[in-house]
Length: 212
Image (cartoon, rainbow, N blue to C red):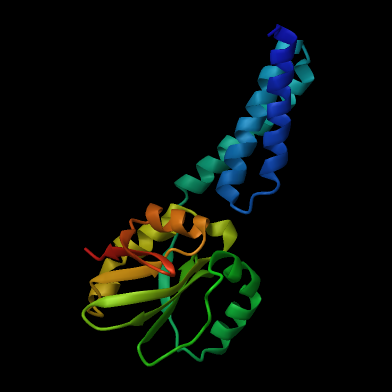
């Protein structure tokens, strides 16, 4: 392959990555993809002698790095807010995010019971997630919904909930949390948060995580 073709591939790769970054709902991944795409354009600009292109994208890459540094270095405040199953805000939240919830968990239907545990995940006091589960005795909690607003889907929330706030579940005599697999994206998220395959049935794979 001649050098000119290689240069074009690098340029097209940068173009595709920058275009994809605008389609991502996750702020972190959008910044990472923007950074990689901009670096491709920096290389492309230098290789073909288009120094303004290289300089512009070097600035874009620097800004993306700075934003990622801000995201990972800023101390965030997380907390849980337990709510009643008939909370008006809860109903409004479920209604507002109904389409996205169905995309993540197509089989979800809100059917609260006396054993329901419902709480919001607050990040810097903004409601960014909703957890709905049902206790079934023996220290088991069956998760019905673990929804996080798309732009806040990173591992920080999972670490906070299942590691830092493990005592919250222990105080309620919960020792193991179960969840259905849901979509492929939901299954990946479960694995990232420490859930492991537990058993299978005709509805799919059941995942679980012990509370330590």
